[in-house]
Image (cartoon, rainbow, N blue to C red):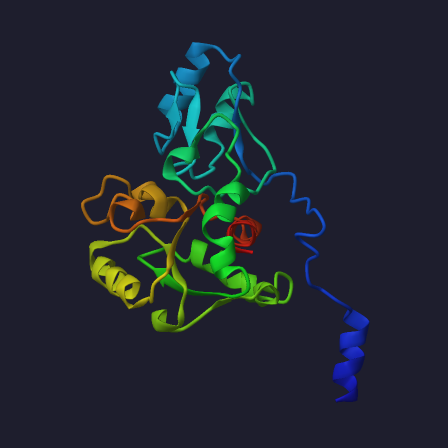
Length: 247
């Protein structure tokens, strides 16, 4: 017992100070993309053609972050002249159309004040559903329970049963084999409930988009309240979304 207390004293507090303190991510982290309007039409067209996710609209000069997997191809090809990725990890939005962006996103907090903050402000219990995910999004959700992020200190927890949950968090491209299980989990969650889509696979199908084996985005099956883009979204992206939307 004394050794345990001594070890705890020597290590000190390892929990992140976010959101009270700002956090700087590594220099190579790719966050919110920014489209530069001054780039030539030819360069924009080259980037759009090279995008593996068909996420760039060269004419409108916007990126669909719901499709984007943040691979950085457009930034490398244009040498940052058409698209550059910032270190901003605050990417979540309340509507799918808001993910079509040239670099600006609407305030998530303003939407939350009108809808969910009073309803779930003191406690939020979530059931996570992996609908054929590769485990990347799932892993970065799991680390929110570690001492560094300590999601429970905000009154947010992941629970084992949808009957104990206020909402569901969905990851993966939603395969045909998982569709029924997902819908049953949603039905088992008592109202009022929220639906959170995490990762490009859930938002649009991701790399599997167009396959007959998956659903073309969670929004085609359920009413989605919160969209969190990324492949996978950084744990801080998930944390920011949950805190901004519900706390």
